[in-house]
Length: 112
Length: 118
Image (cartoon, rainbow over the protein chains, first blue to last red):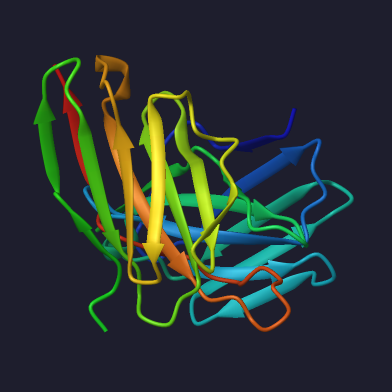
């Protein structure tokens, strides 16, 4: 069955450092991969999308890589800030349909 | 734009009662999604609509769950009868699909309804 795995343990880093979150998937050939941020008591908020034919995408302090051979995406937050503390969800979708599957998320804590 | 609107924000009910959750998508969006989120199972897609038509309801857990979208600006998710294991946060999301019907890039989520079934 289709499966998405994200770091199950929380990630604790110091302010100013780069946070790296991992998303691995199996039994799936996504057309694209998305990263969302979710704060407690709120719905997920879209951050970045990367397509299967793209290797890397950047947006301000965020960078996403996508390796379809390894079936893995890495999500980087550079110069991290305490305000970046949240849960980050990885989501996959394929072409021709609307169904998106989400990973369980990784909790990030950035200490001042 | 006010974003996706869901109501109620919190619902506490007793087992066996009917529960109706409501969603107003972002104006102009033609796709609507209902998700359920729990600690154990994460975020699960229950059903999605495109142009008010249900496209895939394979995520609906059982016949106790039903969803409707009578028009482009309103959708409901109903649970009848409710059970304690239905307790979760239910999210509605909407997105816009370009001409041709291919999937859009971004889903915009509402604030969710926290459902507790006693």
